[in-house]
Image 1: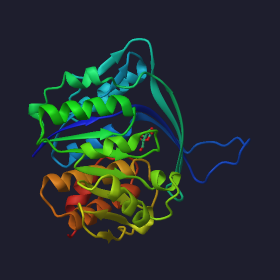
Image 2: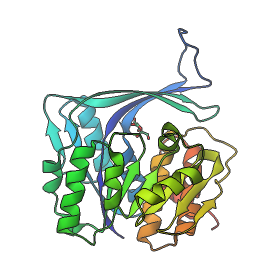
Image 3: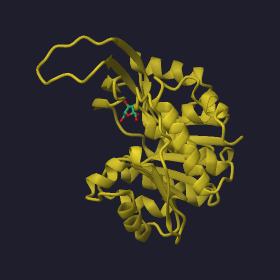
Image 4: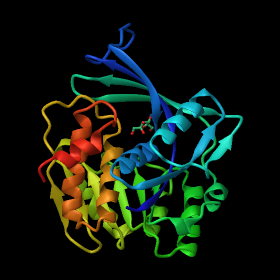
Length: 296
Ligand code: FRU
């Protein structure tokens, strides 16, 4: 199995599970509450570690109670984080999440008061240890320096970037990645109404990368460098109860499949299956075990 470095945020997630979605200015009672670690890169690493990969995380930790919860959770998944940046002043980024168990929708109010990871912290990582590096496309100026360092030090080390939210200049990161994982949110925020129209446009900006975009119940789309766009149907689940982190799970599965050398169409199909399973359970526990049991 491969050694993977994930670069991105860790959050404290305060999840209220409801049977429905509250009206504005109403008072409702949650069925259940969970306080746990979240964050796209860390969620993906947790799934990757379940799939048998060795994972390290590089990100920012606050010296507060939330930071402690994050440390304990990562440790429990065998994810090492010796290269993270400790900020004594800030607070752990916190997501207040309303999870509607009737349809799986997750509504996130995120509060952030912590510096972004600096390129200097990333540069401390010994890149010779890794077979893959995955980045969350966040603070563009810093991530670009990290990517330049990676390509200079380890030109053959493949990397992926999650392009989830529109951020100024994010397209300047595209040329450094072997794999770009676009979200539907990014597509729609940029005026694209389908994954196909997004990928066709992105192909011009990143002609040397594999491009992937998941589009909820419409399945996922991908394209090889200079190739045609192809589609894999969503893995239909009757019991969708929790979509929190489904995109992070999908991304983890694509990376895992690429590391296994699976062709992109099969990688997409398998990733839809894992993301679909995620939506039919709360949290991530036992996800890979359920996936391994599927008749493939
Ligand atoms: C899910 C998630 C949550 C986190 C939020 C951050 O994808 O990573 O765990 O609170 O998104 O944007």
